[in-house]
Image 1 (cartoon, helix red, strand yellow):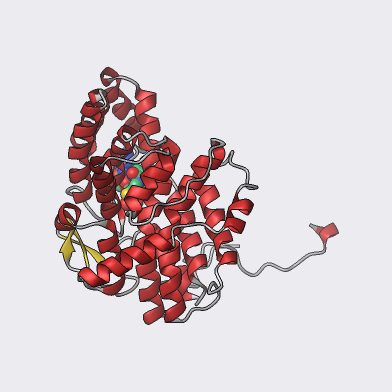
Image 2: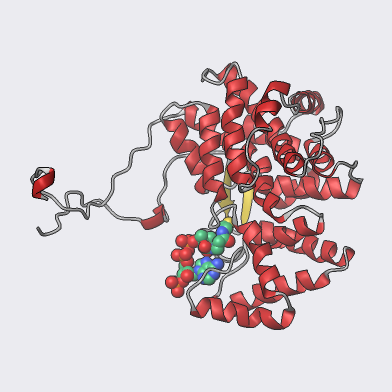
Length: 378
Ligand code: COA
């Protein structure tokens, strides 16, 4: 039977250029990214992750009292429930940390008495708990798989400080905390990216916040989205030396393979976050005595621009930054979640405020008019 199109609507593969909702959280304006009106250059230089999270959720920067109280709330909520930890310890750890994290966040809802309450009051509490605990979960995974004690967060310290402390077991120095905090600021939101859209799609059925965040983690995990930062490090290790970098890129392009951390759906003249991370990558790789990692990255970046006109995205230089900070490669994408949860929650809240369920159509390419036959007649 001939193919019949029953729906003649426009087909936008990957929804390129489709406007799916109105939003006031973050946006790509010209060649920069803004969160609630402030540029990423301004915020990454002057703000902190806690302040940016407050900004994303409340549409204004906090005053001192508001910020102190917000930081204290986050800090108090970083601790994982003992019963929850004992269940987490029973989960296999020979899986990708993002798979473990996806399960752990879903499980977390069973210890949250507000999990099924979608009121604004309950959502405010869940927003704090989810954001505060994301880093504690990632570091708990690292402790469990290495058969180390799960450390408790220290009071009075920031999310960035506690993440590095609980990950490594030693108190981090001020420079490391500042740099890591800036990375969290840079990753906190990015308008209608794949995982933010996943958050909004799940929220649009009036499902609960934990479900929306689990959807987002699943979307972030993929190598075309957040999973790219891990794959950049894997790629650099595979290339091995500077001499092989250019040929690697040319071979990848000839084979129509993606070079990880390069390209973007929206930015065509470069991702402003990559420009900031590039500087950090240069400084940090030199500091740990591995400048060749930055040089190899810069050569790949350069070759991709010359050969294909494509620029690096946020994941390209963050890989060498995290590596130089001594973070295990498969923890790179979970770190993305530790930051991006702030943005996902802002999208979840905005979606609840002016909700209409997402229900697009597909362009029909299947068969029609078939008649069912008994199993023996097929
Ligand atoms: N390496 C090689 N070629 C790439 C590329 C990459 N990283 N990114 C895009 N291209 C090429 C495509 O092959 C295509 O080429 P063609 O027109 O000759 O067929 C063209 O550029 C357009 O790419 P397309 O995949 O259609 O762009 P997109 O908007 O659908 O995808 C990304 C955007 C980010 C998913 C894509 O650039 C990509 O896969 N990058 C690598 C993964 C990554 O870093 N993801 C993190 C995103 S923040």
